Length: 164
View 1 (cartoon, rainbow, N blue to C red):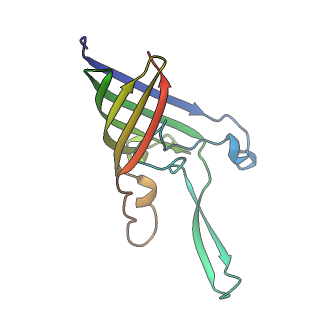
View 2 (cartoon, helix red, strand yellow):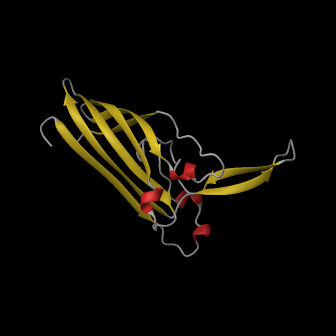
View 3 (cartoon, rainbow, N blue to C red):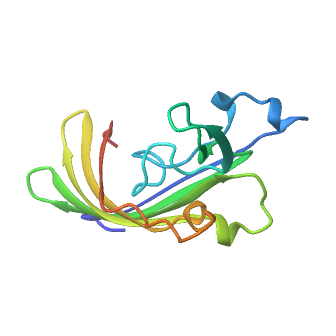
């Protein structure tokens, strides 16, 4: 934008083209969240959820838990403004969005959203970034039956990337 102001855009799109998605191993499915995805969420925290009921071996009671199973598709992105400070330091403000999902019918309702601020230290070869992010919307938490699950609090993210 100028000598001291920078606009950084990042995006990631993925799609699975398999005949039987249920046969696709979890390692090949899409997950979102974490330092290089949607900050404000834990690593691979954003993904479709499957409900599984098991019997607790100690109490004999049935326990229903949600398990993140990965999605057919992925869409993530970030918009970040950075301002250079003296001595190779910088500050940043950003918003991240995205999710792993199975159907593209209602993207506006399935995208998770977060905002945050960060500190940058530009070394000769790499840039070290420390970000604090807050999740604003998580559609998977809203899908949990009963009372809505609270969003995660502030999360600290560390990024080390090549200096551009």
